[in-house]
Length: 449
Image 1 (cartoon, rainbow, N blue to C red):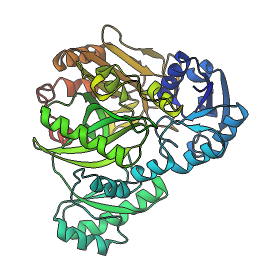
Image 2: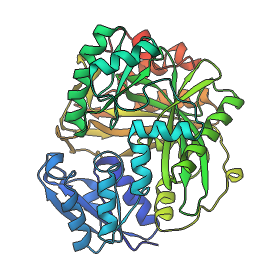
Image 3: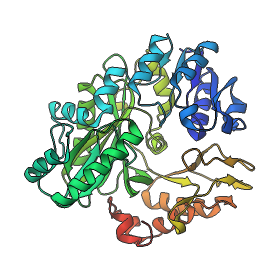
């Protein structure tokens, strides 16, 4: 097992990893930007090293500085968390080339699944259902129009190296496709330094369901059931839950088997997520894989009792999975709300600045993952998520009631947050009845763009 791990991230995930490491008697090295010098995890780390100014491009995205910090601190491994360099195959290779283990999959597996166009090829070879689309990335709008003519409209444009909704566009005719293609290329180039775009037939109102997988370096792969991430705004997830409402036993089993096939076909090891769109009651299609820990991993931990961060670390250290598929059971229901420092009433305008009061909820079945505290300053340089509120109960109905109570208790001031929006959503009959899909927000909340 590793003696010392460097955390190449910030915010709540840095604190989450630090706690898991300390429980495993592993020393922690935190890197931080000048803006995060007062962060709780920096104070709690066994050693902390500043790697640059506030801007992520000058700190958390500087792979050479991070690896140099690991070498100076004599770290055995680097945990990338999510975002930043977490899915960067070149960074993973650089770490291992410097005799520092990367807590994640191999660069080869990451390349296969991290690039959406390549991942689709792997999925098709593994007989995992995919949405009809282009066979690979397309060069220009003219080529895209020819492909779209065969597929039929509406069409979804996607960035091959994309994530978080960036580089995604919908076109309902050839004219729109030509216009959107150039815009998608520009956005993808700016976000990922990669302008490759591919096409898929657009599904109007599917459910977004993802399967958590876990694999070791000895060929063992298991799934930990599914999460439903259908409640989204502009492809950004707001609420996640497990298990997914509305999935029957057969479809759930087929989804989980497909995810395991994909992981095995790519030679995957570590924690990862295979994402699908579910259309109707039986049809489902692979859309992408995330070769890292997910923001929403706590809901899976709650229904399975598996600590995914600790599992990641053990797998990276070469240990075998301590359980088989038969050992993993799905119990109860869990829901997560992402608490962002944004104002839903003003177009989700970021609400940076100092938090004067941070009073999280508590009680049976309530978990709060957050790095915030009274006096914490929310920086405008990073993602606006300041907390994840997770609840677990025996039934989905009870979990909704606990979440609503917890949201009422959660006080963050004077900053604006998404808490009022979450309360609105969970109070709706449609949500309580499990009538969720990716069109839920525009269909039920006209003023939430």
